[in-house]
Image 1 (cartoon, rainbow, N blue to C red):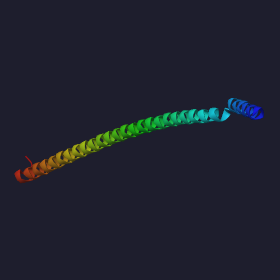
Image 2: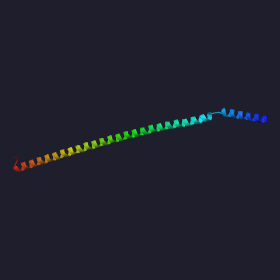
Image 3: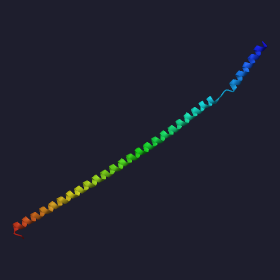
Amino acid sequence: MKKLLLSVAFLLALSISFTSCRDEKKGDSAEEAVENAVDATEETMEDAGDAVEEAVEDAGEAVDDAVDATGEAIDNAADAAGEMVDDAADAVDDAANKAADKVDEKAKELTGGH
């Protein structure tokens, strides 16, 4: 009985020493892995946010450029139309003057040059 009691005490002491001295690196490495995953996720989310922000800025600049180009095209078309109207008015004036000159010439011919 004494040997049995000593054997049980020895096994109990041995199991306590193995339990208390076990390697806790596995627990730490799991915690570190979770922390690293959280950090990596945060960095990825920040990078994604930066990419979205940059894409929005680029799209805004493209819209601004398109608006500017459209405005310039409209201005150029208006200028061209104005020049065409001016040229047409000049041509009408020239034709009217030529017609008036011919009428004057015919009137002089008919009246005998007076």
